[in-house]
Image (tube, rainbow, N blue to C red):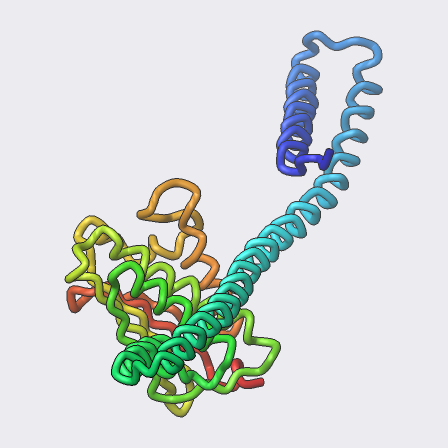
Length: 286
């Protein structure tokens, strides 16, 4: 069984504190010649030696705690990336399966000579493809797959998605997973936030553009009065309006954004909840 380093550290520092209190108290009583034995100097020397050794041990424990914290953050990031890889795989398999079914229907209508029905079926299919696939032309295949999957999920939940891609993205292979994780987390938040609204009010906007310095990603959804909270709170670890054991998405997004020297801000001034992410182009492209 793996040792719980946090419980061990707490017990270690408590013992260390108790020993320090004992030796300080003994020094105080020595000044008044109270409850002193002939071996008190040896006892005090032994306690001092133990405290010195424990101080050296405290340095080791502090390093272990630091490394453990880094490992925990890496595990969270890896879990988020793995979830998005699963999403990409699921949408690929879904399209593969759907395409086979659509081709079967098209062939059947063609064999029966039902050209009018075939034309209507193809038009309907093309409209669906245009909504989910052809609009997602971000310049990054992995991001296109993610956005396509999220748009289809939104349509199934009667949510209207306005996707605006003004400029294509150039991203190095080393930064793809981080970027997909950042976008995926915020997209999930926008879709989750409006589930309690009526279908006619479920509308989100996702925008990608660039300026001479940064890539700018904007994600907005209607502002819920119940969720009007101080802007900084949304980036706190574990903060969530969705219940317990949630609230890691924006916190992780902020850390990944800052890792690339970017910024993430929240704007609620226009009656909507808007997350704005700016990442320096040179950090994303190299």
